[in-house]
Amino acid sequence: MSFDKVFISCAAPAFCGIKAGNLFSLPVQLFNKEKYEEWKKLFLSVGLKCRAVKISSKKILVLVYNSLWINEILSSPHVSAYLKSKGYLLDFGESEEAYKKGCNKNLWGLLNESEAFISSLFYRIQYSSSFPHEIGILLGYPLQDVIAFEKSQGKNFSFCGIWKCYSESREAVEKARLCQCRFRECSGLCSEWFEQGCSLCQIIEKYKKRGNYESCCNLRKYNRQYRNDGKRNLSVSKRKWS
Image 1 (cartoon, rainbow, N blue to C red):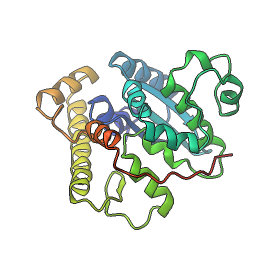
Image 2 (image 1 turned 180 degrees about the horizontal axis):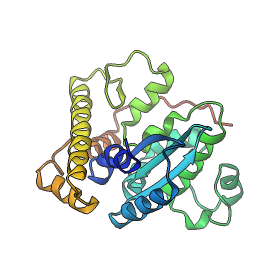
Image 3 (image 1 turned 60 degrees about the vertical axis):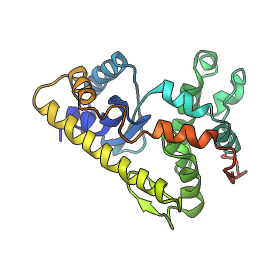
Image 4 (image 1 turned 135 degrees about the vertical axis):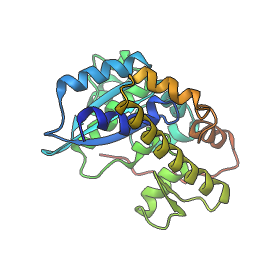
C-alpha cells in the first residue's frame, strides 16, 4: 500500500469527524518526509493536526487528531485525575517539570492542553520501557475501558473491536460493536473515493452527505455522558510514571 493510501485509510475516522484521533504505524522505508509534510498541511486545512515519531529502527508512529475534541476530553475531571495520577501535568506554568516530561520549556506556555499532553505522551512512547496505554484517551476511547485494559493487561474483556470494551452493560458492548463497524466502513469508503480521484475535502463532503456524519457511532457523546454521570466510580491507579 502506498504512503498516501495508508494515510487515507488509517486516518479516515479522524478527518471525517467521527473519532478524536487515529494512531497508526508505518515502516521506516515507506515513510516519505515530503509527503508527510504535504499531508500535515492538508490535515491542518480541515482543522486537524498530525504528529510523527520514530519508535524503533523499523517503525514510525503517526497520530492524526482533532485538538479541540481532545481538549474537550481532557476537560473531564475523571480524565484529568487519571492522567495526573500517572504523572502528567495538565496545568500551565510548570515549565521545568514540563520539560522533563518531553516539552520544550520555552514553548510550554504556547502549547494548549492537548498539545502539551501529546508531547508528554510521545516522549513516553519513545523513552519509557512500557507502552503508555493512556494513549487510548487521545483516540476517544471510554476512560473506564482504558483503565480496565491496563489493570487486566488486556484480558477479560466483554468485546474486542477497535478497542477492548470491559463494561458488562449490553448497551456499552453494542456501542463498541457499532463503532467498529462505522470506523471500518468509513476507512473503506474513503479509500474507495480516494482511488476514484477525490481530494481530501471532497472525501469529507461525500462522507457528510451520506447522512452518517452526525448519527454514526458518537464516542464524543458517549464520553460526555460518562463524564456527567457522577454515580460511576472510577478506581484510578496511584502509580506514577517515571
